[in-house]
Length: 379
Image (cartoon, rainbow, N blue to C red; front, side, top):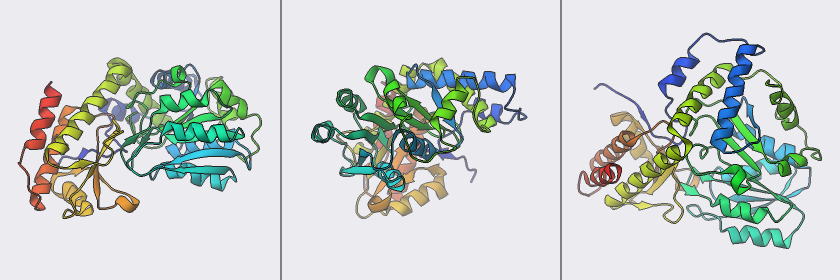
């Protein structure tokens, strides 16, 4: 049978042809007027998506590199911070802090739940020495969205800066960096920004940037002061990932053409259609109280092996969804509606899920999920 891949994972995500074609062009040298113009357009486009007037710095790394840069540039050994851990990627903040000798107070949140802002406020009220609050806008391992606006309202009244992992959320979830007062936002290229993995981004408020002057943690490649000094001159401190930046410019043009609010609305619509479709099949959401517009995590019946389900989706229908991680392995399936996706990607995903569930013995009305999704998307 002819195969056509449908990539519905929460990263990497499909890459638009405009970016693919741009990246296929002959490479240019990075220390040239030509590349500086491309870099400048990429930087301005990122500021548009971030909704910030601050520079958005670019590193040639995965999003984790931007996370590490936030820790090692803002803090000193022994500093006190809060790290919210409600999933596989939230755990990473605590792990990075531990490596650098930062004293992280871990706020463990049940997987599938969002942190209660009141818990963070209480911790900050109890200890005025806390320097930063690390959290995740969209926890892709659980499909949970954190109320970043509420957290920013809290950190405004304290010395602590709010540092947000928005790696999967930038360009997909509502995020008004300056308006809300979010101090640090880190992101990656292979999610809502619609290009392959390999670029990481970080923005800093004035409040956050002041901390870089006092930080005594080791840093070289991920030195934010070096990166900021270079970008102000329209350059990068080290060799950039030239063709990825070229592809990024094309992806950002597409986002600008659609309009960032329309992009967010599209993600919201696809997410709603997916959630209602799986409920129509008699399935439950892992995060019904705080669902993300990036990816939907769906609980599977005990009789259905989630690992086998994901394998069958790939092997028979070439639909690439994601399974569960850690304790959720085999228990959930994660269907993304992220980046270069539209209503028909969602329909294909739900249809393939229905056919595979039926093949595995799950009883339901065939077509119920697709019907529900179509009603929402058409409406």
